[in-house]
Length: 320
Image (tube, rainbow, N blue to C red):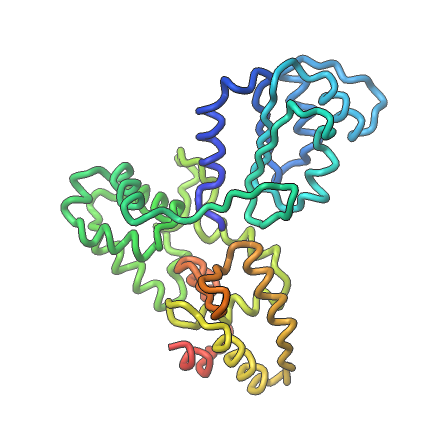
């Protein structure tokens, strides 16, 4: 999911194994810019390739692959959204086996892509990250609160980094006060929009380029209406594992009591669930019992999307 450290892991890999790629490492931003034009720009500026005029974009990219310098090459495609449309047309031919490809993405791809799914940090790793950011003395002074804060953030690296940098800028602010404010904002469906979870873009040195809400928003806009509706519905459940039959019951009740006379469709609901799973916005805990969970910050994000909508009191009572 967003903020779990995919880009940071790719950066660490390139730094540790750069000597293995004598042909160079080419980093491409898959979301923001056209991959083909990035490859051409890299080849011209870093490899001094002279590309023949009059070629179509795909042919220019193919020329780059054929004339790349010797040795194994690593291509890093960061934040892939649409593999078929944005990536596949520009990849080197399978015959060029010296090109190795690493992609970071929020989605799940089928073979031949080999996936490595990242989870959140352990409690110990989370506390270690917070300590690196704000210092050992400050963590030791409020050790139990520091643990509780990491737990409230459910050990998401982005959340801990944002909160840590916020605390670093406000040395007078106690961890207890910050935790209390986050919890109060959560009651108002505003925690995800609190300043401590935003990125200070002016002087940030973080490899993360977005705050928590902005990071999750990138996945939100990829969802259809049914998936967005399901996310908001699940957010009114208590912060605990959710048996799927309860989610179905809440949706059925919602349809029966909605003014628009919505019709309950179990297959439509299952398709929406599949999309949330594909974007790592929902986690399957137990397959046989069909039990799911939302990360606490994802839950806060979905709840913020309920702003301005009538409270789903019936579903909320079932959830709790």
